[in-house]
Structure formats: C-alpha cells, structure tokens
Length: 305
Image 1: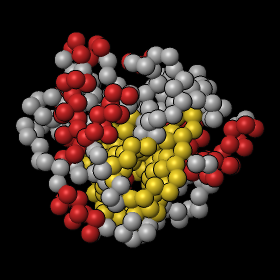
Image 2: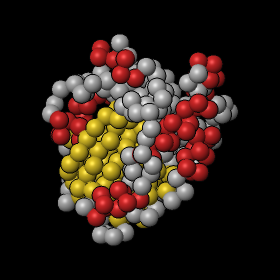
Image 3: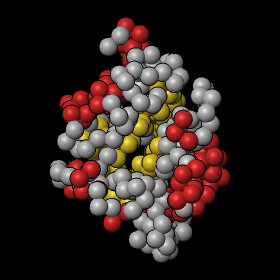
C-alpha cells in the first residue's frame, strides 16, 4: 500500500414473477420500524445504454418497473450501483422523502452516457427515519482522493460511497458503505475490497457497519478473504447457511438464465458490529415478464443491538 493510500486510510474517518406489485405502503414500513428492523436493499440497476433500448430492455422501458419493485419492498435504505444522472434524477423524483447521497461530485469524465461515463453507487435512505451525520466518497485506487483514478489494471474507475446516519427515534447510529468492484481485473477486485476493509477498520469492532455492493465475485472467491478476516459476515449466509445462494446477474433473462448457475451470486450485503440480520432474500420480481435490471436485487432486514 502506498504512503498516500496509507495516510488516506488512517485519516479518512474524519473526512466527510409478479404481474402486479403492491403499492409502497407507509404502514408496513411503520410496523417494521416499530419492531426495530432496518430494511436494506442492494440494487444494481444497470446504466442506460442505447443497445439496451434497441433490445427492448432500456431504461425508458425499465424505469417504472425498477422503481415499482424497489418501492414494493418498503426499504429504509437502498444501496445502488450503475447509476447515471438520468437515473439519479428519476430516483429523487420517485422517493421525495429520501436522500440520495453519493451521486453528485466531480464530473471528471467527458462522456456523460453509457459505460464510457463513470456510473456511481449512491445510497438512498429515508429522511423520515434517519438523520445524516456525515458521509464521503473515495476512489478505489492508490490515489483515493483523485476522482476517476485507476490502479491494479482496473478496467474502469471504481469508488466507494459511505454514510453515517442516526435513527431519529432511538438515537442508534451506524454506517453504510457501498461499492461496485471491477469486472475484469482479479487483482483490482482483491485490492479494492481490501482497501474498503482497511478503511472501515478505523471504527471499533462493536461499531455497527453495513457493507453492500456488486462485488463481481462468487461467494468462494479470494476477493472475500480480506472481508471475512476483517470481521464481516454476510447476511444471506447467516440466515440461509453457507454455500452458493444462486445467481444474481441474469442478462435480463431472470430465472430462466441458463448460464446463471455456473456464474453464481455476485451481489452481497455484509455487516459487522452490534447488528444482526433477521431476514435475507434474493428479489426475483418481474412485472409483466420484464425485469427491473440485469441483476436480481438483494434484501436484508437487520436489528441493531
């Protein structure tokens, strides 16, 4: 680890198949809140691409489906990946009582659309339930304060967003870190995951943290060695046991995706500290045969102890 990266890590903590889905109900969310549960979703919504539009699975087709599926789960917090500006704007409109943190920032890339642009991983959380204490963004490279920087032969610039929030009703606070690891370079995936684990280790072991994202890695990948040895547990594994949980990336084919079993799950919700999961699932909902993304979403309910 370079001197710049080491100094940064030490000091960062001070820096800042359903035809119809149920409506988004405050009553269900209120019942869960009364029981002390916090529902977190991890959703790779896929960037808007021209080739997807031509194939009939573009954002213009998927937008309402995606928003409906997310709303139907009554989430408290949604960790998102592959978000471009048009999608960030749509999310803000669809969730007026939520704050979207981690999209706005340096616009370092001259290409505003498609995979040539830098898709971001913002965190959406309920302003009714939580107060934002602080938050930040850093880039998963050896120069983490340089927007758009790349290391370890990563195919694209990658970053992590984090928020530290307090539940208004109870005063309990916790931290959510959200990322999207590289999809090509194994070394990049190893180093990017390790970097976030090291940064998060600034907090005391009992401090509550949640670590979400598209890791582009199967559950038995060496990428997770640093995560597991860093004291993190995975919510779906805790509830359902170890082993392959089933695929999450599906190329818009959903449960009929033939290549899925060989690829496995790549989306995860990890946790450490004074918190435990009470429910975890893979969201496989579709609306009239159309899926909200080329990924299934992850969902976990937690109790903060």
